[in-house]
Amino acid sequence: MLTLHTKIAHAEAIAAQLVLPYELREKCRLRATLDSGEEVAVFTVRGTVLRDGDLLTGEDQRVIRVVAAPEPTYKVTCPDAHALLRCAFHLGNRHTQAQVGDGFLRIRADAVLKEMLAGLGATVVEEQAAFEPESGAYGGGHGHHHDHGQGPLAPIPLRQKIHRPSDPK
Image 1 (tube, rainbow, N blue to C red):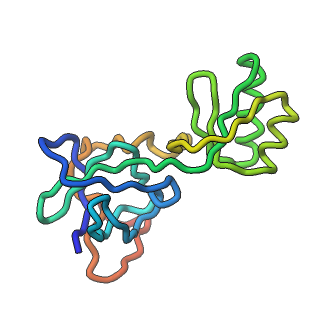
Image 2 (tube, rainbow, N blue to C red; image 1 turned 135 degrees about the vertical axis):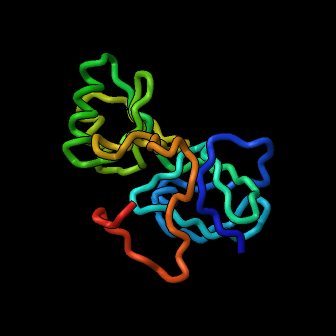
């Protein structure tokens, strides 16, 4: 089984794609299937989020592109910026992950949130879309670390290892 553990910035050729919904792109240990049908294991440091377009590789140096799978979402729009900001505030108050776009928010489909947003004057449209929520104030952005996208995402474990913030880097 191919093991993917290193993120790279660019590649000459892409061997296959790994199409995953956001929920699986958040996992630090994952067994998945490439679009070619090959099974892979993905090992990342806890807290790493794989983003659409990320490039991963392993020991055999093949490069795999991560693709954000379309999934059930709501696109939230409002008649003005103030109303959209109110919606964002109320979603954040409920610790709801949200993607911020140009004049819209996108959240995972949730009937209770849909009703709340409609009550705030938003137009909420169901759509199948790639979900790329904000990483949060303490999330480190979109994976921009000092390694500039190079190097192992996590130690390649022989056995499951728990990673703690106090572990040496």
